[in-house]
Length: 508
Image (cartoon, rainbow, N blue to C red; front, top):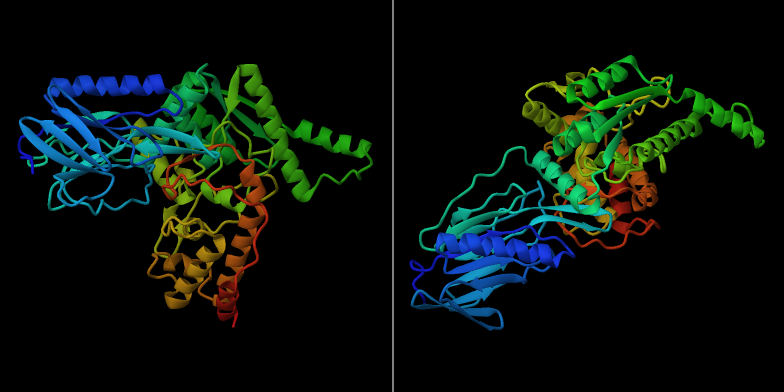
């Protein structure tokens, strides 16, 4: 066994860019320089965003490395060290692990292995319509499993010199991490996918989602690259139109105002030419026509600006399909599609704190009360008179997270997740999940009402699958940290016998 008091290990947390070997090698070269300057005997760096076994160990100065399977023999500072790579091996001095899990605010447990170096990359991975964010946070653990060194988890490159006997620097966890992660990933996406630096065009309605997204764009790219458009109809309230104007002025972005009413009327007149009744454009058809008219205009404006359209959809809307295909479901990127509305409240407050003044209007944020909440401006698509979103906020935010597997990543199907929710409800009405208050607030403590609501949510989610397949890429920052992006079937499976048994218990 080598004397770990002598060995100085450099941990290099580098950005890895898929398909950019030269950039990745340059990042490693930078870390080698830092390690040499720090007097390290060996440098550990990640080498992949997908393969946790792919960790590079680079000998420095007079060090020599021999590889024998999962064991690396390191000759350094007059000692010989046996290093297990990827898994614990008896008789080794310590273990080296590459952690390629993307960041998730759900959290992850510390590795069970002891005397361990965990090396993590930073960067993003764009796969299957999802843009995964890697935050870093590489760490070293001593023989008792105690953290003795931790690098930044701020989505940026970092370096630390560590001895496994004495440790090294320990960075604290960053604040406002979802906000910082989204902004960092937006910048990487913009740099790697759109290097020509286009304008980012946003439909700025004055609601919470577009207000947060506009603020994120300005934080990431500055006001000069953001152009807002308020595309009003007779259904848009004075409150949201005032919000949109105030947000644009506060953020310092260029804002263009107008009405799409004439275009919607013209669309109805054109439908008449094709044999439809004069009142055919009504109800849901009219709502979708407005959304698609906005999308057509935003796409045209983006072309005029040499820009791209950003999508404003949040996670609950995306899950329930509460968006119009080829309407408000368009865009080059959706920054907030992995955040529920409740998570957006926190992001909005963090944005206001970061700017030092109110950029997201207070009237868009609910005030929680002992019995429920008060909300000055309820969320609405504003596509019909008096319309408000059909979601049961706070409760449906939790439900979507559960059904999509935030707290049970091993769940493979919507059916299994729904069965688990029903079982938990039958056990304690979801008090242990912390949403009992919202179950009561919405009258879902009645099992039949709960069953009706659950089946409505599941029907929405199943019906929305085809929209999700065609949705813009979304930044994954809050849902389970997995990049096993299996193909999503648009054919809904039949509910299982377990599902039917539990649903009968709720209804009887």
